[in-house]
Length: 143
Image (tube, rainbow, N blue to C red; front, side):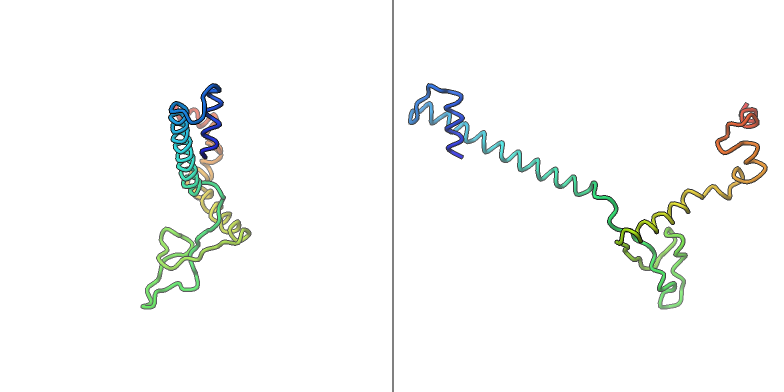
């Protein structure tokens, strides 16, 4: 690193002579600046690595209720494996991409069809209000 510091001093001060106090002083400043830059670069690299560990990479694992045991050893039910919020049993980790896709799609179908059985998704309100509530009846109703 000293060779680089000397080269930087000579580039910045072409008339400086090696071995003089001025040259040595400038070389020490360059060494300190290079060391600081290297430390900052390492710090930024570590921060980048730490932040990127939480991002990207896609889904690598999906946890689903383990349905091999629906009751606890004392016979009490562990909940409904179809409703993960109420499941108290063990979980299985799925890591195969095709299996993950299947389970994610199953969860999405359930999630996005929650309104299917609500009053506005059934007749006669569905025909009166339409799928997005913009029919003339819906506008009159709002007024």
